[in-house]
Image 1 (cartoon, rainbow, N blue to C red):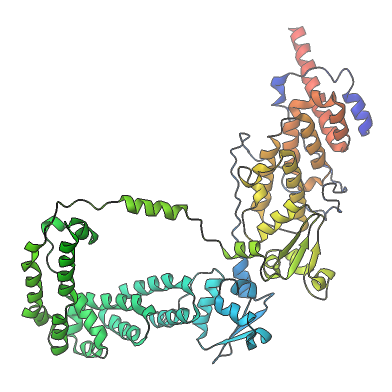
Image 2: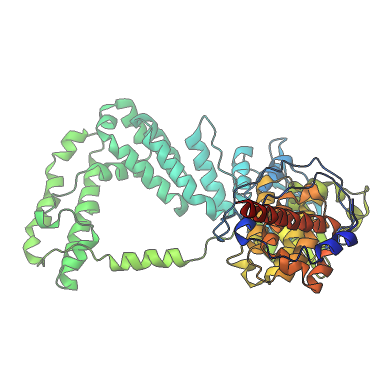
Length: 571
């Protein structure tokens, strides 16, 4: 083979400076070199990584209009691996009457759970021993821990309702407010699938618990029992069972009673429409007072206490029930109604818009990465030091897992890892390990403020870092290639194109096949300008392979052009 200087001499000769046919540039074939080499990594100033098998060089179909969309959020299973494996844990939660012990991480629990934070920071015995003992059963504790690890709630196959009741009591005790809605929804689903005997049993269990925090579950049990009250009062055994809790029975009977008939001019509207239909506050208060008497007046409560053994049918037909209804409608003439209109939806729309404008709830890993609380590892780049968590980075990277093992490497003893990467590259790697959007891949928003040439160099360096750290996510590697292609096609100066192209061709070929294809596609239209510019040739000389590619393309251009001229002469 000719040396790079000889090739450049040939390329700059008068014969090679002829103007090619621009229509043939876009159809010019590009051949990827088959030879492999190992060279110094100029961008990162480190040794080249171990050789890998070259990936398939089949060209992917890309769009050049900048509309290529890349996936920027890599939702993995870091928290699940941390919870299930217990590796890199620094806190134990022991069940009091069991041998079960959960190995967890302070970095996960303490920022979000005030109970764990207090136990680990306020000088208690748990602060010294890093062991917390809880009296609840292991299923309840596991549900609480899974919530803080952002894992789905696991329900037992048997005694699900009793488990939900115990869990609801526990989360009120330990202040786990984020689980309340999910537990109450699951409890409602269970009640919907039960028959009347099971509903009564669950209702009795709920009403045995004290505290206002059980009110929603009590009301759900009341509605479920009232749904089949006909069957309850006809079943002597169940009827005797429900009388064990007078309050549960009273509320269930009240809920089972039908309300008064709704006037025709009020049908189809929400209860809030009654207030809007009143001319004055006085008329509204009268309607409200009569409505409360009809639903929960002392007159009805007395009837329930005196006649607990009456059948449901006789209770419904009793004059005491109808007396309240008749009294309500006897005073309807005092309430002046205006013309009914559909409820105003502007307030609802405004509330919905405000909810949409609220920022989404920050995830656990994002909160850990931004706050840098409970960190136990430092990663030093060229210009900045990042404080991170071993449990997170080691769960997502085999390289960090090996490097941080105590007693094996210096990094494990010093809790400090040094890299020769720039700050954006280290930040991008950590964003990926924390399952966050990788900012340098977001060309429209986060990376839009960076210089295009600088961004291309960062993406080349990021490709090397991903290979060095053994990050095997195919989607991440694909997105880096897509982002480089979009950024590289935004370069307008041919000298910048040659400069970035030389950086790409200096790196191992098996890692940058797609990068090289992108460079050559962009270089083709500028071959004549490149070989006629001294500054561009200086960049080109940095890589002999890049020179070979440029000369090969120029040779084929002239060959096709000369052949076309000869054909025209023969014609």
